[in-house]
Amino acid sequence: MTKPFKLTVLMLALLQAPAWAAGEAIDQSRNVSASEKIEIENMRGEVRIVAVKANTFSVKGTLDEKAEGYELTSENGVTRFAVKMPRSLYNGWNSDKQEGSDLTIEVPVGSELKFSGVNANVSASGIEGGARLTTVNGKVDAEKLKGDIALETVNGEISSRDNSGRIQITTVNGQINDKGSAGSLELESVNGEISSESRATEVELEVVNGEGRLDLTGTERLEFSSVNGEIRAAIKNSKKPRISASSVSGASRVTLDADVSARFDLEASAGGDIDNGLTADKATRAKYGPRRHLEFRTGSGDGNVEISTVSGEIELKKH
Amino acid sequence: MKTEQQLDAMISQLAPALEPQRDLWPDISARLEPRQRRGYGAWLGVAAAAVLTLWFWPQQLVQVPQLAQNGPVAVSNEPQVQQAEAQVPMANADVSLLAVSEQLSRQLNEEQTRQLKALQKIPDGFSDWSQQIAIWNKAQAQIELALAFQPDNQKLIQQLQRLQQQQLSYIAKLVETSELT
Image (cartoon, rainbow over all chains, first blue to last red; front, side, top):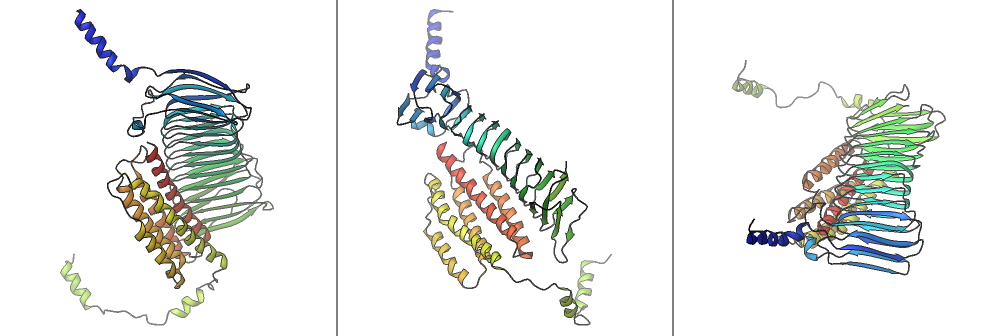
């Protein structure tokens, strides 16, 4: 290889460098309070947030290659860390996850966390003062969080494991997988699929086109609704549940304990089906119009189960 | 097989009206269950539907134009607000509140659709927004049809409200995402 050729290759490589070069390294820490409010803003990349016993906030890793530095302030119980991005990047950046920051952040166990990103994947674990994790195009992974918890994305999967408190999980197109949650749980999706294995005493689920699968233990109150999607809810160890559900043309399939004690009110307004596998009671058809209706009671009727559909299916089963 | 002309000729020979041989109404009337009086609860639900729609109407009109600012068409909201206000006396004029609510909802949807179409860039994940809106509209139409048979059905009214709210939340999320990306 000739010298001028080598030089040309080197110069070309240098010109291309910003496209693949790693961003600026960061290694910062601050002493903070045990119940510090922590706000993190990182538009692109991967961020891992873990709880530690020490009362320190630390951030390590590399910043977004397009970043114009960062802001780290800590005062009056509030610590704020933001990766500064050029305004021009707010429009039209691509969603290539290889671009962006790669950060590991440590926060005190008792802190309250707020994270926001756009094309970012975020994971958080062990934080007990509440957490709000929001991204647009990216995954959210939350484990062993406590307190008020909100997990939100538009396009991306949300994974929730062993979280407890007041939990809200929202997506538009992504999938939600929840396991081991406790307290109260709200799940919402437009098109994504939702699955949950939960011990939450109160559960709400809302889907439009997506499907929902709930395996619940000890849930006392359950509300769910769908437009076209199918929802399957199986509840164990709930002798007098309060269930309220509705669908337009989707299916609601509920499995309950065989010895459940509740009053049931099932209604299909316009052409829907009711399949009762809990008792021998059968739905009756209205004398005029397409309405079907079924009311019955099991045990002493302590709980209350109301399920309605317009033209979908209602199915009751026992464990 | 008879031709269409032959069938038309036969039809033209038939009497234009057909009367029953006896009065059928007494039998029908005897089989009808006594009509239940509409309770206050039902009216409250209907009123809530109208109030909810009216409540969301101006808010939405504020939100959507933020989208349109960067789009090719800037749309003034004033006529729509006046139109919405003009609907209120209709409700007082003994027109069903639910009907007003439904009408407002339809107008709102049309306005939303028009303004969303003016967007230059639809964010990732919302490219099928018009199909999504169509799904809600279709579902709402199904509920409205069921309500025609059971106008006092609280569950249906609540379901209709829920769908309207979902639709508004979806559009709000679209706007928010559009601004972020």
